[in-house]
Length: 326
Image (cartoon, rainbow, N blue to C red):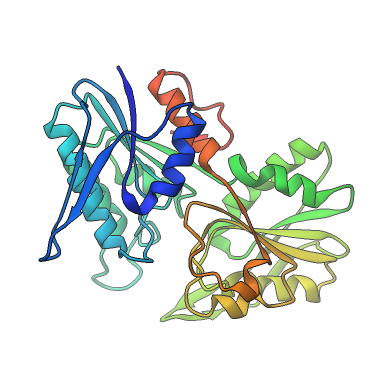
């Protein structure tokens, strides 16, 4: 089957980088917005019998909401199926609604599952996504093939540089991220060939109010890398960093896949408790202001997406990719 990679307008930048990583270029397509707000997207080249990958990040802004981007993805995948594509894979650098994967209040929606049902309904064969909030919920929401990538495949080398030869620890800013941080710690230990410490901060959120003061782990004298799936307002990272510094850490770095930088993020990014912030380019940093942009390092996830697409296209194993699960 021919390999074709499309990227909708909102994700054209990372899409071009992903296509380049596979040794090809983006396939051509048309997107149109009508005066009444409706949208049309169609491939401008033959897709019948092709192995097609559609790149669309479902983050909000700067021009479209997550709902807009989801709808455009669904319409385009449907058009590919209507026109005979043999296999369609949705490549989602950021998957909206993934955090709402269970009921936490009476009569809550389980939005992650509903989004999965919509993506499947238009004929998607496989979904590739980066750093899902809850990988078990992601895999269980979809009945089609899923590939979950995480930040070990993108920012681990930077973590090795940050660790150097000095004592280093990996920390989770909340109990929900413990498994993610543990896997990152294990990978870092394997790279460094020495022990890496571990720490955990308690956190409970209810009605937007964050509480919890318990802390476990040894961080005194160490460079501490706080690992999470995303940075929204940055408050969770700063809260953990302040406690880690209070307990004698040499310095603290915040590492995450997705930099949303919503709300009061500028204030958090300026906080001296965090020495530096490291993210990937799954979400364009359009909310970063000039006064804090120099505190944020951005590492491209495109090579990892490119490797994943190439292996899926060639029907080669993906389990030995850095941080890939299916």
